[in-house]
Each structure stands twice: as structure tokens, then as C-alpha cells.
Image 1 (cartoon, helix red, strand yellow):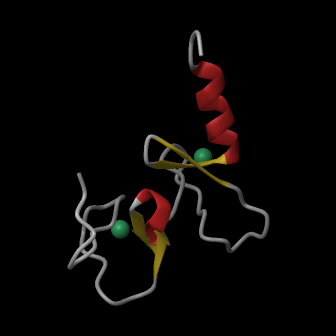
Image 2 (spheres, rainbow, N blue to C red):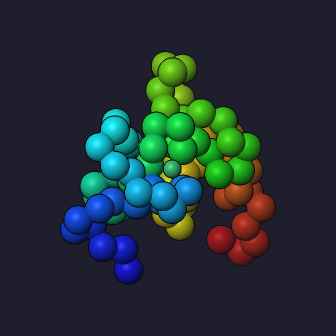
Length: 78
Ligand SMILES: [Zn+2]
Ligand SMILES: [Zn+2]
């Protein structure tokens, strides 16, 4: 389990976040550098530079909507 006390670690690159801006999803205990807030599959930026970008979370990993749908369709017997 991930400790959220003290230093926070980026869920993507596992480096300490420090005091800079970060994307934090409190409900899931996930936090990311701004440049690490991207789809784990296609690595497209999910940081909101494009309005309307949807972020999907599966198994504590970030996906863009396209990759998430592809991931779901690839699951058998779901
Ligand atoms: Zn990071
Ligand atoms: Zn993607």
C-alpha cells in the first residue's frame, strides 16, 4: 500500500513529487508530476492542455478515453 504521509511519490515515475505543481487524485491516492499525467498506453498528455480530454483510471493507471475503450474491448468475458 502507498503511504500518503510525508513525501508523495509520483505514481508514474516513482520519483518524489516535491513542491511543484502536481496532479492529485485524492480518492485513489494517486499523484503525478504534471508531465507524468499521461496515458500509460499511448503516452498522450492528459493534463488538460486540450480541453475535453477525458481521463480514465483502471487498476490505478491512467488511460485516455480511446485506450480505455480499446482496453475494455480487449478484455474477455468481462
Ligand atoms: Zn512523475
Ligand atoms: Zn491513450
